[in-house]
Image 1 (tube, helix red, strand yellow):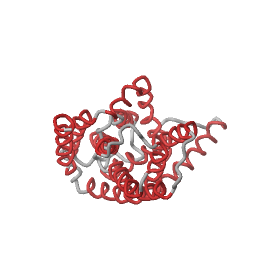
Image 2 (cartoon, rainbow, N blue to C red):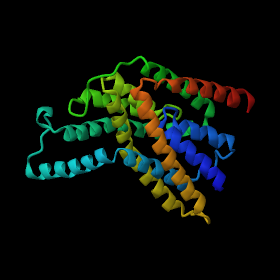
Image 3 (cartoon, rainbow, N blue to C red):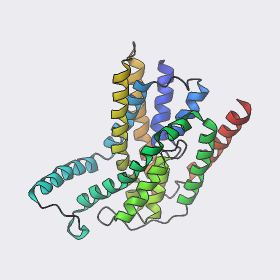
Image 4 (cartoon, rainbow, N blue to C red):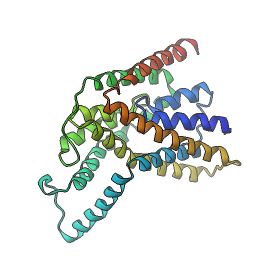
Length: 279
């Protein structure tokens, strides 16, 4: 891993993880362009994902700490027999926590198809078509109005809608942020709440991915001789991720989220043409 490659891939991960353009799809494209499709660097993947994880915490730290407090409060209520699930009795933060958990449940459906999905990461032409789908999703987002649903009024139906959108986004080339924010808006979420819900929902899945990758790295026993490029890549991913979240918040608030649709349509078409007919 060279420093230049670490900076490039760290920036790609940081921007594309949160901008609605699919980080997985872009990493597939860049890895193929750099002729490294057969030599995925697990340790680097761990560190750049950790960088984007820290970026979300830095932006939404108040919400994250409230949720951590609610987790411990929920456990206390569970062991004292005071746990309640009726929304009329829940605080906004407790309802938010419950709905995030509900949104994570659809991800269990991916387990039987794990190998098939991983195979798609070797197919840049498929990624190109998936980016076209992302473009269509983002065009839809521009037609959705600002809703009224917030933290205290989110329902199980809303949470499942966003959760199944996140499940769909495990396909490389389908933007997780684009799909989940659009699903939130379609469910009637307020614009700023749709962004907050989407990004905080990414924390458990990102943490799980990091832990799985750490396990794979520990099994491989392969560590780099030079750590500097890896740490630089993580820092670049964190900084660019922080900037990307701020940009998404601004564009969603101004109802200009769909501007990324044209980018995805152009990149998707170029990817299909290049890898399908020229490469």
